[in-house]
Image 1 (tube, rainbow, N blue to C red):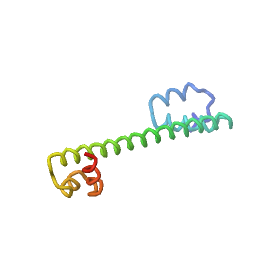
Image 2: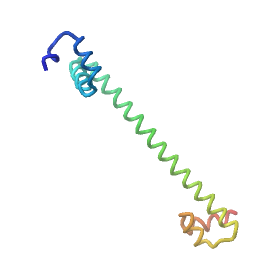
Image 3: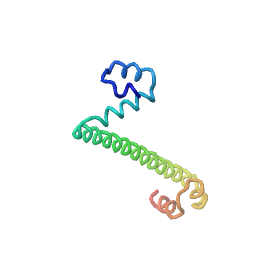
Image 4: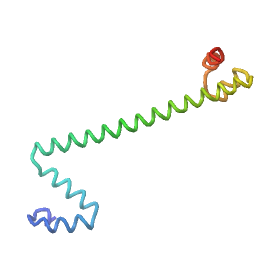
Amino acid sequence: MLIFGSEDKANWEVLKMNEPTLKKAMDTLEFLSQDQEARRSYEERQKFLHDEASMIEWATEQGIVKGEQKKALEIAKNMLSIGLEVSVVAKASGLSEADVESLKKVR
């Protein structure tokens, strides 16, 4: 704790390099010591990074869902093309019977 009160930043750097947990605590202390404008800018940047990561995660999940739906439709079309019953195609593909019926009409 004596080091936190020290004006000699060289001691800080040595400790930060050797101990990751202490580095995080010191970085937080340094952040809290900044002026209000610097803190506001930092918090805006953190919010932006968090929002960006959330959007990427959402887009990835949506892409996976759409890909799975597309694959289910392809499987159902192939199964219908070999003459399988609508109920069997629905069970195998995970589509509803109504969806399979509509695929059957489009073919």
